[in-house]
Amino acid sequence: MFGKFLSKFSRDMGIDLGTKNTLVYVKDKGIIINEPSVVAVNNKTNQILAVGEEARRMVGKTPSHIVAIRPLMSGVISDFEVTERMLKHFIEKVNRESASLLSRPRVVIGIPLGVTEVERKAVEDATLHAGAREVFLIEEPMAAAIGARLPIQEASGNMVVDMGGGTTEIAIISLGGIVSWRSLRIAGNELDQNIIQYAREHFNLLLGERTAEELKIKIGGVTEDVELLETPMRGRDLLTGLPKEVIISTAHLREAMSRSINLIIENIKATIEATPPELVADIYSRGIVLTGGGALLRGFAQAIQNETHIPVHIVDDPLTAVVRGTGIVLDDLDNLRDILVLSTNESSITK
Image (cartoon, rainbow, N blue to C red):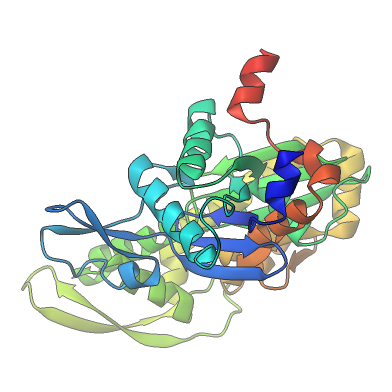
């Protein structure tokens, strides 16, 4: 009863806590935060200097006593304290105009498939310590499917491939549950590392992570039939130590990323092979739904379609599919509670 009273005053949130970006949906307001998951910390004073976009601009450009930290690796918390402080910053940003006692929100937060109980507890604890009143966990591909408005509670197969910054989540969903799945630590960050390695091996050029990501977004492509684009690639010459510029094309990046892309596609095929035939028939007719930042990589959907012979659809605004899904769950929590992941407290009771 008291919880219902508090919910009238709090700004309940859905959060996509991503390796690269954190998005926040606020009930009745929509998505109001979409910022990089980066925190700049002054090691001398242990103060947070910047969070989000402001901190991202500092990556690779800070003096020795200032560190720009990405507190999540491969979709899970690697630095608990910094994650807590980042979440607290975002929650306070949302609740700036609210009374502090009555603004503790309920939070629905996305987590990768296959995380351990310790990793789940880390997300719950960080969110509670950051100011949440109650925390509900949902698996990211399930949230992405809901955000894409797929009929997940029907007795039919829905296939989602959610390629984010830290993980690629592949899931077959039916009757509100995940039937078969794969979770890969190969995603956007890995593709950036592929480009950095390629530049080192083929051009003796040392690139930063931001430069590699910008190249991927600007001219990256997966299939041979995508438009061939060129752009300057600037970094440090490994032989002379001086600045160097070379012209790089879509073909170069396709070669650089090919191994990781092929691994993702092989896992998509393996997930389909492990799926009951009735559901495979549904997927063949409905198609594979592609979400996350990886969906925007030129030719990626076509490459999956070429290998699986199943139509592939990119959802509208794939970057926000997960957080939109958490928002839909938040708006209909009573009816969608069964699809949520058990909290660590509940799972310990069931044991």
